[in-house]
Image 1 (spheres, rainbow, N blue to C red):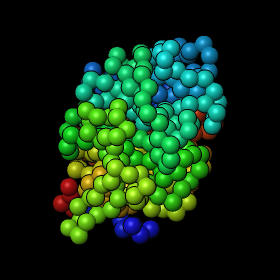
Image 2: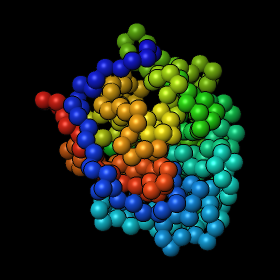
Image 3: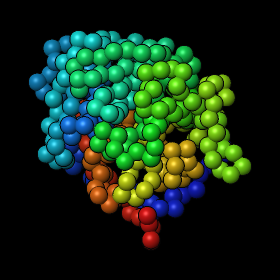
Image 4: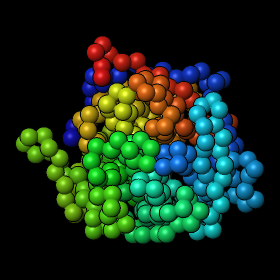
Length: 318
């Protein structure tokens, strides 16, 4: 895949609510991978903080929470979990990088643990079991999210993206993609890795991670990603952080493997040193043009921050 992408054929503009309208909860906690559960709640995880009020008594590297309601009337509640919570700070502490609700279970990728490890919960995040660890690449994986409890998914597979490297704190050249049947998520042997397209433009997959090739390339600018299907416009949206200094982009594609196009890109967002851009599918309008982004960052944005996003579509789209 070549570096450099065309402008989106579907999205003409991306605009954000004024920074003074950003809604903030859970001051002092960041990260926030998020998914739409079977019970209609959003399930999420925070890092290096105390979560929503009332705060937990000890600062956690990884804490769990759920969010009820729609912006601006939403509320967060901490989920206490002796098996899911972790201590530590920064790179030294395990943290969540991806969350997925599928078939009434929650799945979570945990980073900073020799690349990443898969965990799952059958009771909405109160207790967790731990499975295999990726030993190379996939250092900060995230799930492709669809609708409530994985409703509206394109097939019976689950898709996983990550920057092509071991660290969640460095920026790499590409984003890689894996897939697994949703009934085999706990089995490392069930995972396949994207290795390019065939002559007809169909994706090729390999059981060997060594054969992986990126689905997206932006040299030295691929750090942390979030990917969601926007049903209203029929496109896959990837919010990709380039760094921790407010550089990020929104890219869209007709399929999980692309081809990707630029909807929005900035080297320095108007909110300063921010990171972790998430797009909960529950908070998308029926026509897909209004969304609410969750993000966090430094200073006043070290919190569960929610900002309204409006997509302007090109004529005839979707």
